[in-house]
View 1 (cartoon, chains in turn purple, cyan):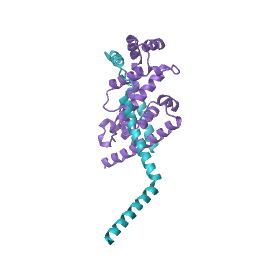
View 2: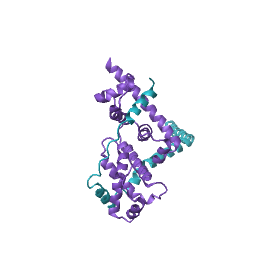
View 3: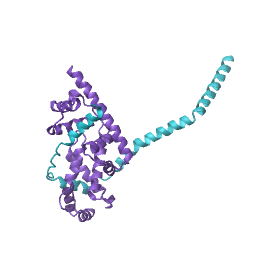
View 4: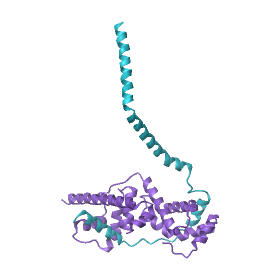
Length: 198
Length: 97
């Protein structure tokens, strides 16, 4: 979340009359928030700075639509999520990673999860996130978005509704479908793991 | 262990990953963004609207075409049968003469 002590309302007034200094201040203020969202939903082979720039351009271009009904940061989050979703949709390939494609560290984490012999430790959390990112690559953009928000960022259905504009039912249906695909994919990878160890 | 547990364990472990540190604003980033904004970038363009509209328009046209073909199937089949009958009678009269 943005932490600098900027008078957002006053700054927005100045940006609306195309004040460059105010626009730069607004970018600096919102940069941590935008970057956090961009990183969570970054398509493969896309530079996070490029995507962050696109988000800011959309924010400025659509500033006239912001009526002040919700906090500005909420509106910015929604613009950022929508922009990321558009970029994910533009990504044509959705590779399905296999057991053999995983690195040694990733295979170790997945082994711990799948065999239940030992729990993955906290130090392996970043690797687990990388494994999940690879599994998410095979999902369509909407399913990927809902799993990331719900299962990785621990957001509520109501929060996801606000961020995406989807109904609660749609969020739940997409979550159910996406989780089902993830579980199926994990089962497939487990079969590959067992086959490889024979 | 069932599939639910495996997914939940993996997700739970991934949630413990420390958030990556947000770097300071890259040098010149704000200036670049503001310059692009002032140059008019980021506004919805006609091309973007066309890109959005054209596949949907094509899909709608295809659906309408199939629906109209379906609705007029009997008529199309009937008219074709009439044409075949007419052609046969012409051929027969030619062969007879």
